[in-house]
Length: 118
Image: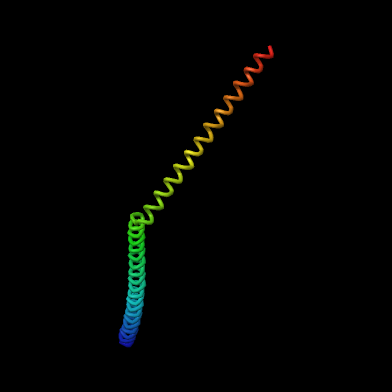
């Protein structure tokens, strides 16, 4: 009978050790899960906050650009650049026209000279 009682004691000891190991592993898993959730939730809230701030900044920038494009100084600046562009293009056209005219005149006169020499 001693073997039976020693087996039951050994078995009880093994069951107790297995239960303590199981509970320890369960506690470690629960702590790891809680830590993961804490990290993931803080990261996602930080990410959401940054994204929200970025979208707000983009919206404010677009609003400011819209308002600036409609302001009196912006309109007058656009008009003055338009006028200046018109002046420059007009002057460029006039210069090319006069250059072409000069080239035509020189061609005519050179062709008349060559005719008269023959």
